[in-house]
Image 1 (cartoon, one colour):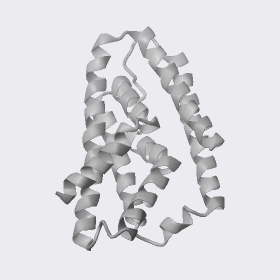
Image 2 (image 1 turned 90 degrees about the vertical axis):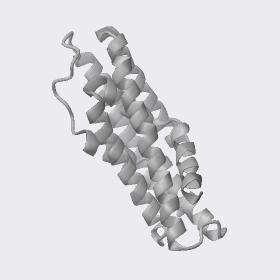
Image 3 (image 1 turned 120 degrees about the horizontal axis):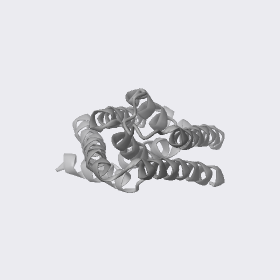
Length: 197
């Protein structure tokens, strides 16, 4: 039961579709299912990392306004960088359609998720609140709940990766370029949204 509670919490985070979802979908369409899956495992690893540090004193540092601002600025810069990269790559796409220069999907997933302030604040805040409210008691329950959360990330993003593989069959190079531009703009939008908070 505790696993499914954690799974539902993790699914809630994934269903609030953000930059990571679009990046994984884009990766799958452009570079294939296996590359998107590598990115998915990187995202899950970062989620697990933030869940682990939410049990330490470090999580209270994220509540310090000054540090929170620095994390937000770094997150904004990374999202703008990724957004501009998608737009730039759209201009370079040729009729060959298949992306020959595959980027390091795992590292990209780590970078995008590590610096995403939404991920940091969500996991550190959520677990700190659950523990403070005595809703998670005992190390065993905490571990099982955490595994449920991370499993939701893996399953949701694996399904996203798989859907990208099938979407690719129905699109041509013009649509692919449009997807690149759109995802680039979406990531820049998320960056601006972070900046305005």
